[in-house]
Length: 354
Image (cartoon, rainbow, N blue to C red; front, side, top):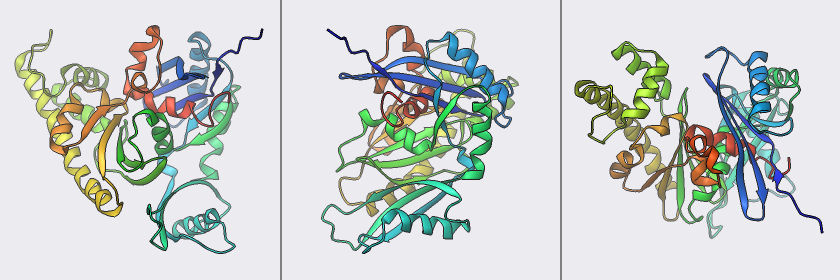
């Protein structure tokens, strides 16, 4: 009798400004299971992607249980083209994808064949409106070549470049609400914060609040307290927002000051997300936004979910890999870090066995 072995996914690779996150899953009839996770510092933080990054990743993957050379890499967010379109729900003889491509081309003044794209359609449940809202994202071919060269020079097979929003939605699938309700996902990553709204499997809307990022928060803490950015991030992830209890090695005055800065930062985020929440609730019929999921390195700050839940009046929770897929005991410390969530979504690109 032949025993079926779980099928491994591709390796999801999330290259940030300071770290590289990698994830690989296995698939069986019971669902996805984490089989390997890695978070490593970049050889040259804040620099453009270089071969040294791919070399460091290759060395780590050998030691930490990854298998294969097929990877899916996050696309360069700053090079993406975005458009929110209102398109006819029916156009005789013309594929909707072709219309989306031409509109994205026109709006960004680029050739229609100069980019790859993904798009999401949302239609009214009763189909009454003659127009359908479509969110489109394009990645120019010229933004891809350098990334492919870097990884392929180290022996990797780059299966795809995926956008953060698509990978985030895929990763968080287990916690998305039924299609009549809308789930928001806030990606609190190093360089920026992105808030996206998902209904079923469709991405409805995205918003990037200005000037709100983990880099901004840790940079401010580092400047105020005269410590490194790395130390500031560790302090933020230790102190948290609301629990009023002593922490070994940090005096009461410092604790209060750190929490004051944390609250100020996330109060600003709360102010920024109210407008897109209201917009989505009014523009898309149904039950509205009922849940907010927090991912990315900034979501690791203790008590953040409860701090945001009260003012927003909806269910708010962190979405680390351990909240989304089965994780073995030996990987729980890594799987409990929401900074790893996007890598898990990238690993799920195209399903198992990639």
